[in-house]
Length: 136
Ligand SMILES: [Zn+2]
Image (cartoon, rainbow, N blue to C red; front, side, top):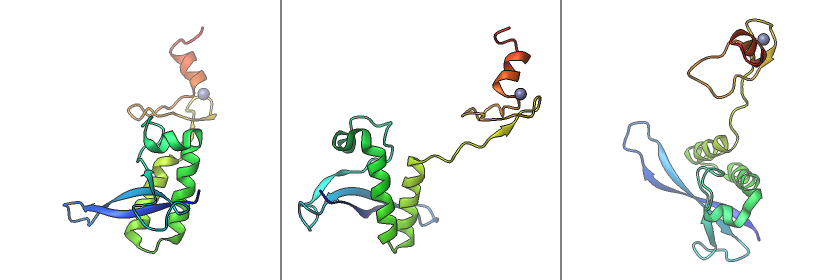
């Protein structure tokens, strides 16, 4: 098993940004050196949320790890800046930005405000509980 990514432009976005869409195919160089004989499966955009994709069936629990390794290796060997940007986009989707910590307006403790974007939380969970009557 010698997996690589084969990245090919699959179309052009119709806007002026010049954005391109790429298809990410996983190939096995041990199987064959020529595409599509070595085609294994497609690399899905959202690994983890799309259970049952061929990629996840093959790699199981190691799907994300494997996808990261494939993308990182592809990024290193790629020279086309647009393809690089496409790979980086995929990598970002695999590894969400670390959550920014927020300082509690009441006790000053830093905490993770979570994914709630609608309400920018100002108080840590403990102060929220005290303020709005959690446990007590
Ligand atoms: Zn607090």
